[in-house]
Image (cartoon, rainbow, N blue to C red; front, side, top):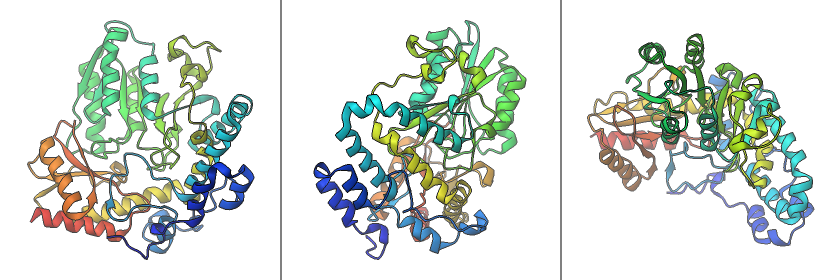
Length: 443
């Protein structure tokens, strides 16, 4: 049932009027109606200074203010937030402004002004990621980013091998297997341990490289979309480098969900997006290549330009200009809360339901309880029920009987599961209702 007292549930009359009148408004009129610059995220409450992240994580007064910055449907409990991120109101308003701006100015803007704006917003994003702007290219999503890195990696020759794991993303596994055709290499898959620890995860990759010395490149995922497992990427990358193996890192679920800057990974090639946990509009992704390694990724389909420019490694065609232009607002909203505070809050919400069902032997939680190995996302299932059909049925029951939206995930060697993912707008009361639903199902 909708909570009529929740500020985030009430329609915003200014936004409704804005949408209705958008074709008739000048850019200046729209700016006046929403109350400021599209590059400012003042509507997102700033975290109080000097409060440790773990302490702030349970400050319900502050997080209620954050939740009020989102317009979400409270008729169901939304625990499928790993798909893409709901836009906060300041970001949504900025996006609508940019849509009107681009539509109004058309090619005059796109050809004459957007290149400068692109360079500025790329520099802003690079600063948040902790890298040189010349090491960042923007794309439409993480899948595009990682396909460009995997397909473009040119240090392979026939007889070499590449390595991937069962918890990697499906499209990336497909791309790694495709290298058999493109580069004439062997594609080797491994199963990650379940249950896992930091050391057993590192050991799994080390043992695979020992068994297969022909491996020259491997895919490593920061946070698995299947189970929410957070891998010790920096340690795995360092271990691989000692053996002369390059790593392409999938940070799709990590940027914004974890307190992370790219240099901490130690990786030369990283793909990600900004529309999951940074909160940018759909259609904004990116990849990072260290300057000295750009030559190891082919120019995209013969793209002309400077050989040492990352810009030649992607050609997306006409992009969603408005989505790209909204990225600085999303980054500002992200920074007003703080990456460490976001991580702590998401872990707090996750812990609340996981600990509430810890005494139920009928339920199996697949994601480890080590805070270094999880973020917001955690997977579960009824013990012994590992099929897609069984876990699809569990997700459907949670939605139809209890009003909780989750998702079934398959592909892990240990079997299918249900993934639950809170967001910053999720309330403790909703988490408690989810835990109670699980207790009812477990009997």
